[in-house]
Length: 94
Length: 155
Image (cartoon, rainbow over all chains, first blue to last red; front, side, top):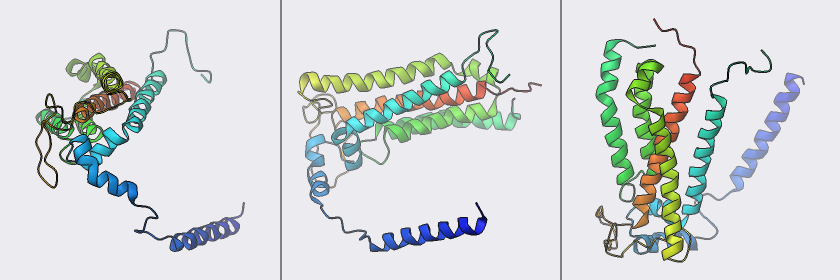
């Protein structure tokens, strides 16, 4: 692909994204019911003064369990990648 | 390979402070900004400090890889046990049955803006501790594995 064509496509995509982004209304969410509920009731439901932690570890704790599992799987993958090779076992391209 | 004596001594002095500060962030996750992931990362930074200052064989004499792996497994198991205890006692997965119950982490909290007390929030500090342990073990084990893949020129 020629560089001028590439730059042209990139500019068209970028201007399109900018055009979309200017139409968005930042700071004015469509519904705020759930946010208000968390802010009003987090303290009495969980007892935690930090509302962010009460969301992450109580209201959405299942998501945190998934994150912990992702980290565990990542460690597993790194462990497999850097394992000790048995004598005689070599990589295919060697 | 080993760094100079200045770097090694500085790492040795800063290492316990990193661990203590990370533990503080983990333990006060329900009161102040921070939590399990952030505090565990800070604790793993202490291990990383040791790693950049010493050779691989010298690190393995200081910290044991098996202990870190155990840390990680215990963290995830602790999370699952706390979650399943909510299912058993409270009736739903990850139910916060300790909050406001009066026992461990069960002091009723005053509503509105207040500094708070440590003994609140029920299951949340336990989950924080579990995630902190897991992140510490996971990140440190990843760093140690990647260091073991290097071919070092030991003088």
